[in-house]
Image 1 (cartoon, helix red, strand yellow):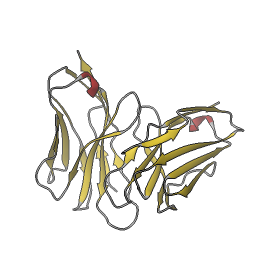
Image 2 (image 1 turned 135 degrees about the vertical axis):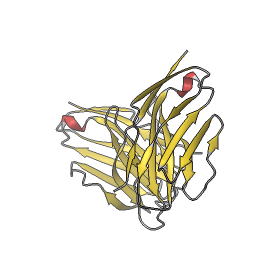
Image 3 (image 1 turned 60 degrees about the horizontal axis):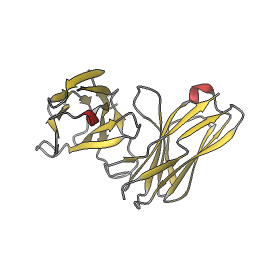
Length: 113
Length: 117
């Protein structure tokens, strides 16, 4: 099973809402990633978790709050977002941060109104 | 800083023909990985092929092959017998092979490939 799942597929939220994105993998991977992707652009790394600990935070605004409750699950909590935060949010996982292959989920299309 | 450059924003090819997508990169590292990812309209990023820098042999996966020129820092992707399902955005990516610590994938800007029936 080489699948990374993400829910929801689409999310529309107002600037005052609080919502969460969820990512799950059952490949035994110990590294998980959040990326943000704007249209026609490459993914931009936001966060990396290694063994359930935050390893990289790419200076992401605090209105994005990641959480890794266990080795299979990664959440991204959203609060007080801006319209410019509208994007595709991709989750990925890899066996470890030092291994080369990242598996991506299908993404959550987020629209902030 | 490492950079990846894809100089062709868009490419098109006739179905069943061969197309080559270009990628160059800049790094001072000697050991690293290079990747081609495909992102179809369904949005999911799919790993197409990978190359370890220490391997001289070019990687091949079915109809996909690479031309890896380490000295020239070039990593092109050749797609043979193009199929309609190959239509996608293709991203070239680089990652240093450092054992400890998290390492980022550095992506190029992408090449949108269209397959003409």
